[in-house]
Image (cartoon, rainbow, N blue to C red; front, top):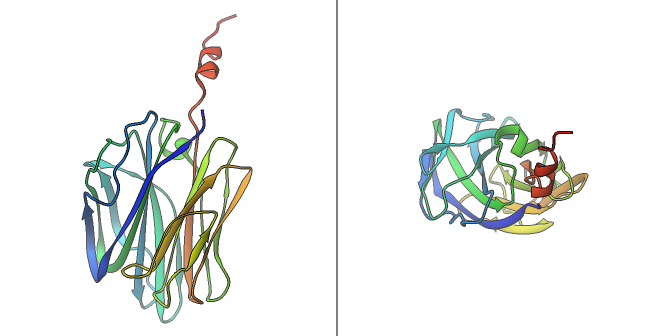
Length: 225
């Protein structure tokens, strides 16, 4: 079985520093089998601060698991990103909620899949990776993966300019409320995901979404010789 793209969406805090996020319209998860949901929380604040403390993230009231993240800080600005995952998320336009300590300018990207290993945690969301860089050049993150899997990545920056494109498959680029972007692609031994920023400091985080075992593989594992 191979992982397949299901749906994606994004939202922001409309230019305001907040300590929570809640939306029932950011993404509608489909009803396919072996579902999974990945959520990227992106934070920007001046003064070089890293990730806020006390972060929690839920879908339809069910807690999601932190997978990976990245932080960039200098003397004038800081930006951070963290990815969360959940297997067997409830289908439909349910509520995605997150909260943290310390007001931040925030962006949220969400993407769902079918055909995913249902174990959860690092088994279903393997090889999470984060990266950051100074102004100039593409934002990028390299993720170990495999044929049949999918990798997903998201990007944000310190507010100095908007992203203009991503490679490979672009899910969105957003410049109005969160200066963020998200993309995904089919798995290979190593996937390098990129987004083109407008010469500003950036962070990126990516996740390998692992395929469920094929039915034939499961049955073979049950044979007693």
